[in-house]
Length: 162
Length: 162
DNA sequence: GGCCAGTCAAACGAAACTGTTTGAGTTAAT
DNA sequence: ATTAACTCAAACAGTTTCGTTTGACTGGCC
Image 1 (tube, each protein chain N blue to C red):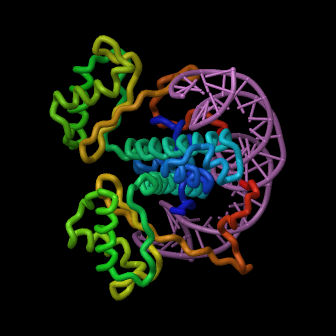
Image 2 (tube, each protein chain N blue to C red):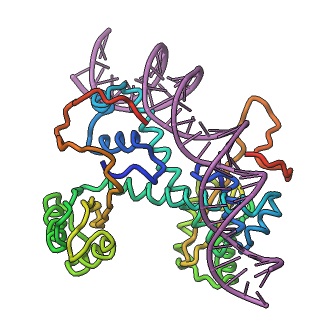
Image 3 (tube, rainbow over the protein chains, first blue to last red):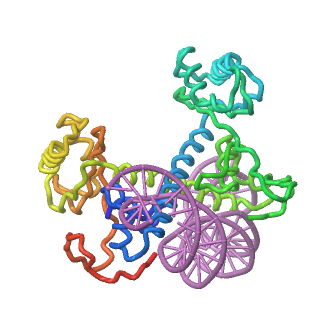
């Protein structure tokens, strides 16, 4: 029973993930644990969601710690974006760890879904870490709901809310 | 405002971490957010704890996915432990990514706190990943009685506890 | 001594998350 | 058409975590 505590996973989730990795089907695990395959599916899904959250969290703090951070506006071309990465890196005394063609393809690979004709369709947040790694992140758009007029972010009210 | 969602951090925690990284004191942040320095301290502590949890979580799933996993018993010598790592690696067709002296020192560095006179003081869980990385983990504490029984039989009605 | 920056514990209500059940749905193979 | 393996949504009660407040505390530094 590997660990359990001090992680974002529960004991149950670790249990299921472990057995799953060993090749058991959800039904087999359900029988062993005395529950239903539906339940095992749900627990496994929650577990994998938590692992992804953990991964994203580390990406986030890496971005927070990055000495170079800026937002590339929608409409910017890939060429300009590449230029900007190098320029901002210079300003902060950071050496970007990729030569130009490589940086170009790295950016393209991760942004092609949000670009067309070599131009960004949405604003993109760019970070360059202290060791020159370049990371990009696309802000999610506001999720849609039946009722309009959402205010997902704080509106500068000092109302202590949680 | 980098991201927020789909991580293990709350908006507040990201906010504090971000401002902290930019060099503000807790009091300055408290004034800006309209709360107390004590509160900022608490939020920051929770945030850092969550980041550590995220890191540990990824370590855990790496261990779960590892093709080689075994528990070295208390009392085993470091030399035997090193031997065992190579032997078990061979069994699973995994090439350990360290030559002997290096593996020895890597293990020693991480286990010296739980060893004396070149022998383990507690059982240690060892994992070798598919690419040959070796990881160790020391179980926290033994809560209660423990029976061996490794047979994967349905043994009892374990009340679903969480 | 008085500041400054920060930590820690206990308490609180509010919000989020947990595993579980139930029931329906999908996809592929036989 | 049946089965196996799995997904998904909604609901539930129980647990955990959240931010916050209050108050006391530790070290440095002047």
